[in-house]
Image (cartoon, rainbow, N blue to C red; front, side):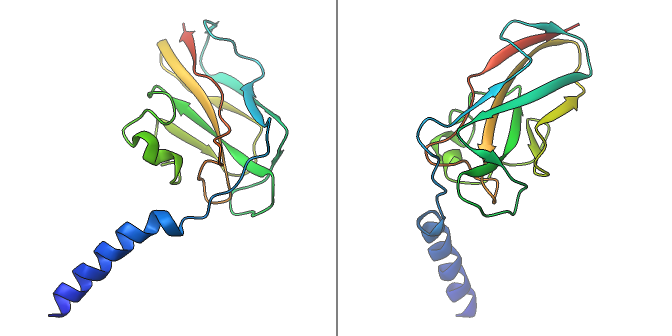
Length: 147
């Protein structure tokens, strides 16, 4: 009987979690962009990426302050909202892996190692919990070639 109660509680939490998730609003007109890279650029590794932000401020992860966030660099994955999580990823924190690089210290630039070849890059601003703002503050996807 205890097992059934535990399973029932787990199922209820799974259904309720999206409803309980806090949405962090983004101000109208907020933008994140690449300062030093353009679509189609040819670069060498390591690649320095400078993150631009307009209409918001930068704060380290864990800092809950209105109109702030921290940067995430998406590498070699479908455009944000169109990945494996689809529209769901708009509601949850971004994972931390080779395709989702977190800069939770409030960094405004990073130097990343990328192997030779074509790579897609996109910036997404995350709130104090690494979740995207509502609406998401994200750049367009750019493609670079590493020589």
